[in-house]
Amino acid sequence: MTDLVDWYEISAQTMALEAYAHPVYQTKIWETQRIIFSVKTPLQLIRESCIMRNYSTYEGKRLAIQECCHFKQNVPIPIDHQHFMCAIPTKSPSSWPCSWIFYAYIERLERHDSRHTNIYFRNGKNQIFPISPNQMENQWIKAGHILAKLNLLDKMKLPVDHSFPPL
Image (cartoon, rainbow, N blue to C red; front, side, top):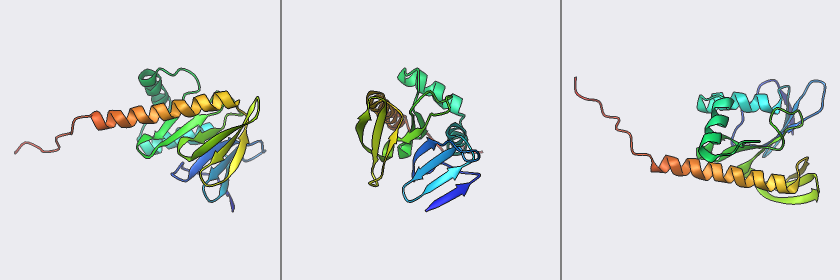
C-alpha cells in the first residue's frame, strides 16, 4: 500500500526515510507495512520528530551525542533511545541525497558494490542505498553504541523523589 502525505511523524513502524527525486514528494518513507511519500525532506521529518517525541531540537540532540559519544560527522540521531529509534544518516545530513535508516529494523548489510549497500530489514524487505558498505557498517555500529550508552546512562541515574514536603 502507498500513501501520499503532507504531515508525518516518525514512529515505531518507520524503517527508513529515503531521499526521493520528485517534483512534489521529497521523501519515500519505508514503514513495516507500507510505503509513504512526503512533501518534506528526510531532514525536515527528523527535525520535526525530535521536537515532537523529545521536546528537543535536532541541533540539541546532535550536539549532545557529539559531546557524549565523541562522534563528529554524520551523527546518528536518537529520536527515542528508550524504544531504540535511532536514525542513521547515509551521507552528510545537509546534503540532498542523505537518507536515514532506523537502527532497530536493520537485519543485515550486504555489499552491492563499492559505493552501495543492500540493507535487509527485519520484515524481509531490502533496499540498496548509496553508501559504501564500510561506511554503513560504521554508522550502524555508531548507532548501536549511542543507544547502548544512553540506555545505560538512564539505568544508572538515581531515582527521583517525587514526594512533596507538607504545607
